[in-house]
Image (cartoon, rainbow, N blue to C red):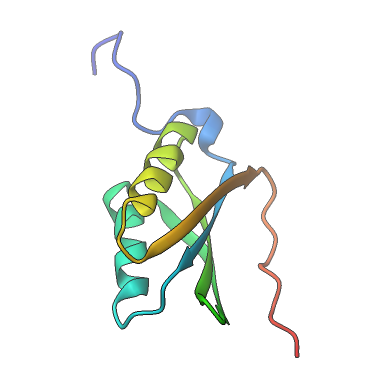
Length: 103
């Protein structure tokens, strides 16, 4: 690798977990379509939760192994999907289990 080349995954992103909250219209292939951008960017999905609602599904996906720039790219690609209504993106440095649905 040349001296001026930048690694695809900077070391500072190694411990960062990105959380994506994607509100979608419920269709038969929506989940598969939503997972596609994560595979393309080589993100490691560490947690996923689906919550049905009156307007569709809310999908919370936690991913590791991506830089902040790649996480933004995933969010933009998700936002461009036809079934997606809204995308939110956040991050944290310590892992925790996604909350379980109650009720």
